[in-house]
Image (cartoon, rainbow over all chains, first blue to last red; front, side):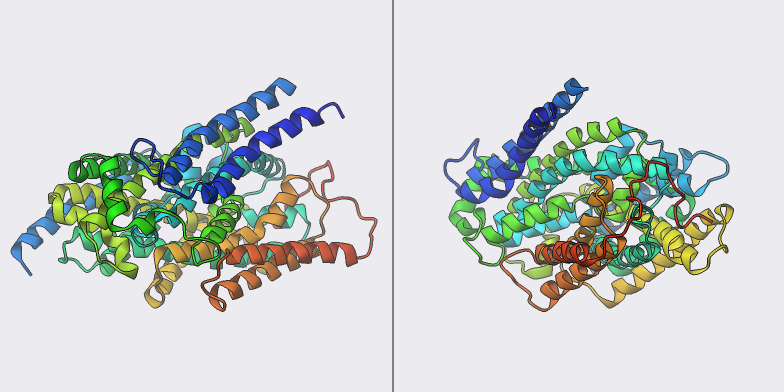
Length: 67
Length: 495
């Protein structure tokens, strides 16, 4: 039973990109403000493409530290 | 025909031919000599490391569609195309959790194909046959999609001088013979060349072209805001390709990302669980390639406006043809041709292994032993390639919408595959009926009730899960041991 907490944390981290892409994109469905000349909604997608590997890295670290 | 276009076509097509032939030769030179058993032929003997898996698990999913379809979608529908990198990233998350478990089952139980997994885990040869037939049938539109991409690329490189359809048929025949010879290991080597070339071309097209014509990305988007402001945001609510469509499609396509027969085969080819986990972390970077393609699509919209429907798939190639010398077109088209041919090779190979192991062998028990299985797979490669070519002559559709049909179908395998990976005690009969109901619903929603505001495959998946739940509740409680018996048992297709 003592493993549910890290496991829940891992699932929570995994849900971040899912929510960011599926829910965040329609919510930030605007052009302004532009980020480096790129419309906001596309900049948001690019940001989360770069953050998704970091989320997976964090999940992997947590998984290893449990072993 | 203007002599200039003939000369340009000769230059560009020569480069394309050299690229295709060079890639095939490079892959063949790297093959192992000696006897090839079925597991080596179809899944590289479960020996692939991080680099091969990277090109197989990402490169084989982003295909000629990456090149033409994504740019074409941007051209026609603008921000709706953002669903492509979004579902990819979700797919990698699912892959991180799912693929190591699938690989382990495969290695423990000697599984080679996706239907092997279902038939073995649920102890249901019937489920194996149904899954096999569905996989092979669904693979066909995906391969025909590549053939259409190939035709577009080759006719552009020919500057009107070459009949693209005949060129595509010739190149496809070459790659079928290559697949016959090389198996998955050869495909992985070819994929390595393909991804390197694609990366170079995409960076040129998506970064250099906007800067060349508009000074900067910001300059390009500023101009788009004046000429096509509606394209830069998603349509509202449940309009076609609107926000509801976006959310449902991103989630649905993301969870189905690895359900393709070639993706499961690539998973079985992995050396270890950690190889797959490391890949899941590296793969999202591939999605950057798609964003760069979007820039190219937007540039094409400003530079060659006024294209409609299928013609938009050529938009970006028209920019190259109009503003760049033939040798640039040669490299772009060469990369595009490989992006169509190499994933076709992987998909045909997976389908051939499925046809032999999960359709022909159960139909003629005891007739194909392991020694002849590799030969049977090679012959199936030729048969399926010929069938795909024939299907392509008879029916064609826009690149993007065909991909959605493929995804709505293969994602119906999700309950069965997830159940097996996570050791759920589901019955073969409920998974079988759910799969059938899901595929039928998805097909009806796609073809009968076209232009819905939500993803049709998701409707199929909901029916699929409901049928699984109902059959599980209704079927009598039996005392059979759970499917996850700890002793491994023989694959039902093994003699």
